[in-house]
Amino acid sequence: MRHRTVRDLMTRPAVCVRPGTGLKETARLLAEHDISAVPVVDEDENPVGMVSEGDLVRAQAELPEPAELLPVRHVPPGRRRTGATGEAAGGSGERPGTAGALMSSPVVPGRPEWSLVEAARTMRSHEVKRLPVVGETGRVIGIISRADLMAVFLRKDDAIADEIADDVLRGALGLSATQISVAVSEGVVRVRGRIGAHDSPELLERLCRAVDGVVDVRLELDGPGQASAAA
Image (cartoon, rainbow, N blue to C red; front, side, top):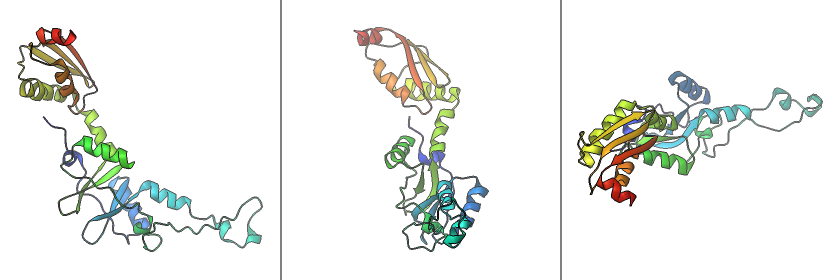
């Protein structure tokens, strides 16, 4: 048994832009591919940053109002001249109005062989919503987002039940279908049956909870193993 990996759920190929790509072209790519962010890559396809819808909205919000560009005497009463330039400060040396000037950097990459648990922990620790996925050469081969990680909660109950029966009960613990049964409803697992004196209910529960898509586990067991655990 194993957790699904980043490779299983990542979007590929990733839509990428260069540091010199204009913001209008970047916005067009986001809309055309129905995505919320793109990696910014160098000439070797290595990620150097990320540009998201939020970055583009922020850049738009920082543009000055037309009245703010007029001489002070022409600013209508009640309006304050802010002195905004409308240039996004990315600190990258790229010219204003480009992905390189707006991007968030440095980028936090992921690996295709990571489990979804590793990806989720990395996103949480770095407070990011997505990871560009890089291969062995460091080139971007895909992208995984928090929305992709949510897909495990959409697994069908039958698929979860089959995985627990095959990989946990029979594969890992050596329990037969005549001893024990499993049913899943809305991600909640119910395991019923009889276990032996050397079987561990705690281990059974932990293994069931490790299956992708499981929300809760409820054991309804009898037998020597259950009795000894209760004692």
